[in-house]
Image (cartoon, rainbow, N blue to C red; front, side, top):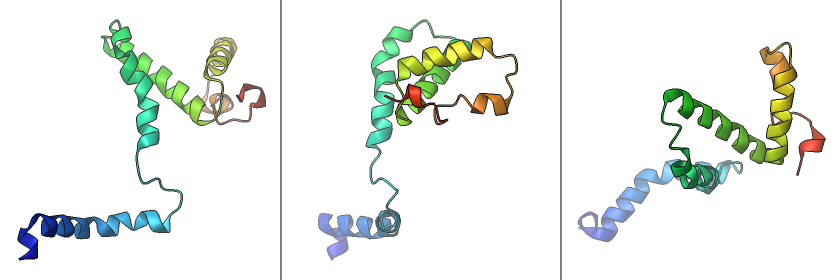
Length: 116
């Protein structure tokens, strides 16, 4: 009879999800919510009306790349504006743009002068 009541339905639903929720108790590095991800996309959502000119696949790809770089820089405690200026300057002057060279300029590399 409990299963047919609203409380019974809630308890049954919770019981089905319990094994998945237990992972948060065993792995302290996991977050129980997605607030960090939502905060990361908030500037993009707020600014989307400003990007009406990015209505082509090329424009959409370009803005996605810039936002990905900016959010990765933020996640690595860099001053985003300084990092983007630095990155554009470096990339424009690089002769060799292979993966190994580009990895040195990723936001997580050890560039102490870029940290906030």
